[in-house]
Amino acid sequence: MRKDGIFIAVEVDDGVAADGAIAAKLAEVCPVDIFAAAAGAVEIVEKNLDECVLCRLCLDAVPDGVRVLKLYEDGAAL
Ligand code: SF4
Image (tube, rainbow, N blue to C red; front, side):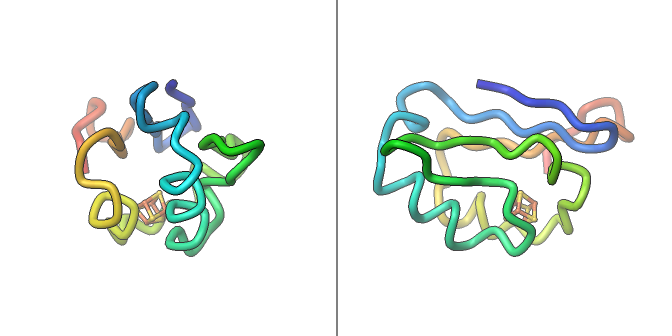
């Protein structure tokens, strides 16, 4: 799953997105609510994408399966 804002895109691998525990963890760590846990799965909250503060907390919480892409740097991964 991938969603794009203007400056930031977030990708979550399908196997990770369907994991309720990971969804809850991502929803908890992101300070600007880019992730929500909906029906036991990860939801990317599109309207909040460009609020990303590049804190890497989501990447630290889920090292494999989540990517934050900087669209303003040609899509470079955070
Ligand atoms: S880097 Fe920080 S602000 Fe950006 S999506 Fe991850 S947890 Fe949220």
